[in-house]
Image 1 (tube, rainbow, N blue to C red):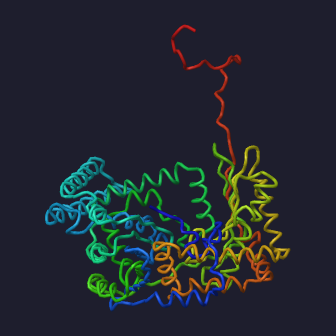
Image 2 (image 1 turned 90 degrees about the vertical axis):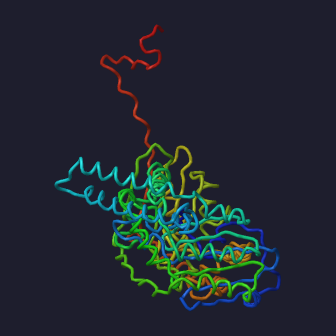
Image 3 (image 1 turned 45 degrees about the vertical axis):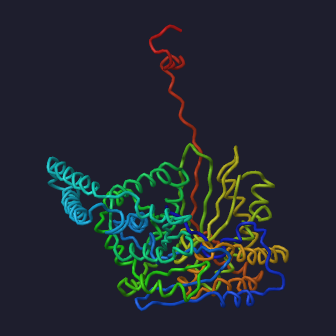
Length: 527
């Protein structure tokens, strides 16, 4: 599964209406103090960060593993590797998922040797031997078939299913990969064994079969989807140098090329203790969890955290524009470069997003959807394509029948000018801050949601408490801040636009003489 994690931070919740109320008489500091009694953080000797939160409401626990690597860590020519590792993580270990590991290990090695020989011949620009290539491809396919004989399909998942797991899934984003599910508390040690084993002894099992699955996923979600193609080209146009210019799904030519050997190298670079955070939330205590975690996850060898150098996107100096002409609904998308989540104005951007997009009272909904009736939906939001690195503040709208992207562009630009030139109302600002508090409470409502939030904030800020401090930062955002930030980034030179213009299918050309074309129905038959 791939996922655009546009708003992993708690501010995602302010973009949705919530009926959860802020506890009356409870300040953010008091709520934080309550959680400080429940949350304990420990870093193992090998560098793994573990966060435990006790919630004894039911005899279950949820976990979330945050891997500090996503599509942005893919290498040029090998896009899609982070996503492939997410798929391979469920394939098992030398003891789980195999009928005969000794034989399978030899077969997997033969696959890689055969594939390396095949791809060397395949990539030749001069002197490629067609017959040799065909023979090498057959040798590779035969090696795959032999290895498949030793696979016990889906055994990793079946073991967990038999022991009560719920909600097992994973996602790959531009700058992180996440794994999660829930289990009964009396299966805590089984969880620790299973999760640590796939980190300690990964097996690139059925890699090329899974690669085919990912390629089909790309065809369905991107290549065959007008909006998918538009978003991909929009991002690639907005980012010239930074790794955000490619989506985690990967380019098709890269997917057709990457190998299990490359995937294993990616794993050993990024799936290391110093680059991961694991959170356990539920009816557990630190005294119960940490010895188990030490016993199993402590076995994983330590390694230095990967260097975090990134190519800096050069400043944009002119508007960029992408136009797709499709037999599809008119669609409008525009984005403006903004700093990453560590920027002092990060909460200002989120307040702007809420004012523009939060529900039926938001400015874009009222203007484009309710009043002008030119859009089915419209929003302005942060976090495209990711949060960790400098990102885009984006706007989109889907046109109603008979209306054009140009109308949407004019209407959106009008609302942008309003936030640049006029103060928001006291009521709007108060409403946004109230919803931010409600959103925080909502995000804490489930073990799995809390586990993901705690892991994300611990990884991004080095302190899970930042989850709660966000509310105080929201409260400090002023009307002047909103106008200042809007004027700083919403300018022509900083803008990238992407449009779907609707085209109609061409009618069959009339034959000479102007007679209508004959129908294919009843070919050769009497009318």
